[in-house]
Each structure stands twice: as structure tokens, then as C-alpha cells.
Length: 541
Image (cartoon, rainbow, N blue to C red; front, side, top):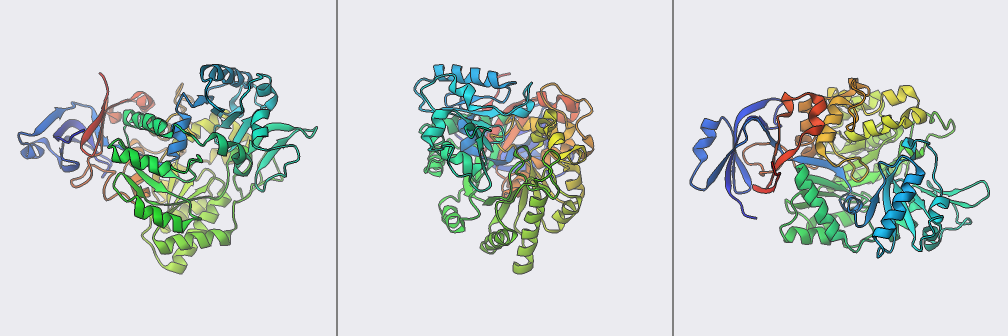
């Protein structure tokens, strides 16, 4: 792939510098943007080596940036030769049928691995059992990860291979399913319980192939940058070596900002020295404070509606969290803290506030990831602490369509969840992401659609949206998936906007999003993806 000089012309250019669309052109020389503005001014930069492309009314904008995903895990879980897809299954029986079909089509796979079952949205919601998997009489272990990746549904062979028996002690903060007769149900909840199984199945020998397939999908969807956050989800010891190998082969067509484990700062410092290019870099650190609502492990200030004695538990104490965040602050690392329950988010903000009090005001771009059930007073704290929210718009419709959040949290808390509008109104920033693989679709345009309409993307229901008072404008959504996603990665000086001097990561959509019904955003497609001034994807039209 070789660079050319380009002038990209359109009646609709969204620079992400501000909220307006302009008419004009973008000049690209080498891997940089050299000018953005009126065509008559930009054309002056044209020479014999410049290719002018007129996109008419199609929208030119910065490439999408997914500010929170698990790149390697997402890659293998979207590789149809390694993982079977269960997200759209409507019953336990349908999941089991797909397992049987996958096993037949992939006879050489040591494990039968699947992802995406979500029992709350089944026609008959219930917890599945190992018995239906064992009834297939397959001679291989089966491990099926839930949609949120916090649970695993296993057959007896998988439990036996992992050394899990009815007498295995219950791990702290996790659960090994036991029925009323003291027998294993096959359901494992949270990392301490699932890892004995998943550590084996997710040591993937075909990782490079899966990563390359995923990068091809990124190009098709206009994703030119991602944040790859801890934990990786795989047990391969060579993940970064493989990604670096892809980079040296000039096939890393999306920029990767790494966020390794906050608890291992010394290791992160070594990684930062090793990986510091504009394609592969260490951008900060990540830690998980709590779990998820669906398994009652999100840390809430008030009990779950359907479990009156349960508020969830944090993964560490406030003192421990304060010490980790302060250490990162002193070493100059931005931090991403996973907080889904409102009390976990308070812990995160308290840790950031403590670090500022001890180490002084900072310029680091700390964030809280997910913020599903945040308190109003904590929203008000975010801007003052210079803390942004990294959120996943597609999670909104997925959770509310199922009705699970109303069951788990009650109507009032469910209605207040994912308050994107309020975060922006507070003066804090939003960065958009998918949390791949825990998402229905990797497509950023589905996330944009979800944030603007608060409707689900398959059928556009409900037409009035789920609690649309929390919605954001189209411009705000695009900025969250470009400029402020780059800010979340401390990468805003290089990418995220169309400005002279920025890296030429540019996409062209098949329409102007500002000229269509917001409900139709979900149908838009990417026509062109450019990374470093090179067109890496062009859709057949």
C-alpha cells in the first residue's frame, strides 16, 4: 500500500472540531491532513501527483474510534471457525442445536466454544443446565460464554477437564453453580469461577488469523482506532507480539492504544517502552471495580429489586483503589476504571479525587467505563475532576429490550440508567465504544443510532426511544466516537478531527447523516476508509 496525495471534496464535511457540517475539501499529503476548508483554497495545494475525488453529498468525517474493547477476545469470538454465535438464540434448545451443528462442522477443534447466550431475552427466560449439553454425547468439552462474558455454561467434560467438582470450594466474589441435590449445574459466574475453564479454551493457536479477519471488519466499518483494554480475555502469552508482527507487516490498519492492568504498573512501564509507535502504543491502565447488573455483581448503593439482601461487592477496597490510582498518577498513566454500579462509580471518583489531592491537579485523561447507574451528584463531580465517561450506546437497548434491568433494578433506576445527556450537560466528555465482544454489532453507526434515538436497531423499536431524555445530538454522538474517543486515549493531538497536521484517518459514508431521518442512521454504510493517507477499504457501489 502506497501513499498518494488526495483532495477529498464534498458538500458535507464533519471535522469534529465543532458541531457544524461544512462544504469544501480535505487535502491529504503523505499520511497527514494538510488543509481543510473551501474548495477554492484547498485546490491551491493540488499538484501533478494529487488525485481529486468528488464525493458529492456524501459525508466525509474522521475515522471512528472505539474507545473500549477487548481486541483479541473480540477477534476470536467473531471468527466463525473458532466460535459459534449465540446472541440471537431465543431458547436453551436453540443454543444446543447450534452447538451440535458447530461440532459437526468443526471436527478438529479441541474445544467447542461459543459466545452470546443471554437467557433473560429467551422466550422462556431461565438459567440453562449442563444436562442439555451432556445429552449431545459429544466427546469434547463445551464452554459457552454469556453475552456479558461474566458467566460460562459448560458441559460435564469441560468441568472435569478444569478439575471442578461438587466439592470445589466456592471462589471469593464468584459462583460455581450447584443444584438442590448438590450437583454441578454447569453454570459458572464471574472470573474466579469461569477462568479454570476459559483459561484453557482461550489459549488460541490461530490468534493471528482471527486478528486479521477482525481488522478487515474494522476497515469495512470505518474503525481506524481502538482502545484495547485489560483483561485481554485470552491466555495466549504472545498477544502483543502477534499484534506487533502484524504492524511490522504493514497490516495493522487500525491504531491500537493499549490499557494494561493497573495492578501491574512496572509491567506497563516496560510495555510502554516496547510499544510506542503511532500504530501500537500504551495509553494508560485499566482496572475492574465491580461486575455487571445481570449477575448481581455490579456494586450498588441500594439492594437489587429482585435480591433485597444483595448490593453486589467491589473487587477491592477503597484504600487499595486509592493506592493504585495514586501510583498511576505519579507515573503519568491515565486510568480507565470499570464502574457499572453507582457505588463502584463513587469509588472511582473518590480515588481520582484523592490522587489529585495528594499529587496535585493533573492533565491526565482518567475515565470511568460504562457508568450505567451513576448518581446525579457523581455526574456533577466528573467535569471538575476532569474525568470522562466511556460508554457503550448499544448496551442501552440490549438491556432494556430484555426487561432485565427493570427486574433487577426496578423501574425508577432502570429509567435513569445510561444518562448520556446529563453527562454532557455537566461539562464532562463522553467517549463511545462497543466493549467488543459484549455487543450486538461492532458497527459504530449502530452506536451512533442508539445514542441519538435510544431505540434498538433491528426493528427501530420503540419509535419514541427508551428514555429519550437521555439521548444526545448527532453531532455530539459523532464527536464522542471520534474526537473525544481520541481524548480518552490521550491521542487527540494526532487523531480524532479533520485538521491540518493530524494523521489522515478519514472515512466517507454513503450519505450525509445530517440529511436523513435519525431512525435511518442504522442503514448507513462506509464507502471509503483511509488510514495514514492510504485507502485501505473501498465499498463496491
